[in-house]
Image (cartoon, rainbow, N blue to C red; front, side, top):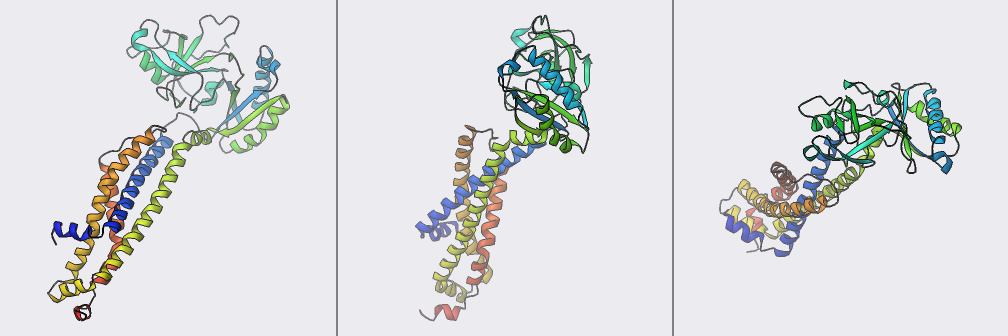
Length: 397
């Protein structure tokens, strides 16, 4: 059957064909973007973080009384809390920090080599103010230099020592060792392994750390706890009670491990991907049902036509191929429109979430999947139509 005749037969049913094309286009657009989101979220959740996600606990808390938020009372509170937490069986190390790793955003600012500010300025780099056991909690390796051992005084900070992650050090000082170099935040004392800091940073592995007291805890602070394997849950169950026993005037916002923190960081994309996936599945199911019903209905209406063709020598296979070709053509047209809708939906989603642009191979793969589903849905009613007896179909002529 010629392409022209296929189009003529197909568009003789304007309303039904139009609805099918709309269904196919919307299904493809949703399916493409849901697959994109799922792929991206899966890649993000599997990317290296440089952290022991399952054996590191995060406690987010804040003093509820103003007197505990200023020094020296706050420094004394830090000391008591860390001593109490480290006494829990199964705790290997504990440290305070002004902010946790694996965050959407937080305390950050630019950093640059003071001798080459114009070409080394890096914006939005997280700055951590931590106790010296912070590096033990992260279980990080020192690649260059030595870690600071003394807490920087708030009264006389001088020129504080700064610890950089490897990626940031390589960015600022690509041709030389970073240790001993001056950045706008202080002198570089050491370079450590990369770890995941803030998602909103220019690079998630760019981090700067100072062994120092936080300037303020009005927005709260974090205690990071590294536990022995298989004892994380046991430690988690005790943390709330232990911390409150040290100082009851404390609000504990949450206690979770870094794996849970990581999941929450990408929950928007994950949830949207799941929603689009469910909608795509339902749309695909509705499209298959619609294709089945349409093929079955029009095969019944064309019984006499099919019977005449069979009487004139048309084989069952040629009749089956003709009916399937009509659905393939409809699917191809709907898929072409769907690719355009997918591009528009992709651009709309990019305004509110991070989503990669469409590539060339995913639409092809999705179109093939759609063609396969439509073929499966229409094969049975098309096969039934080929069994029409020529005598039965033409007896009313």
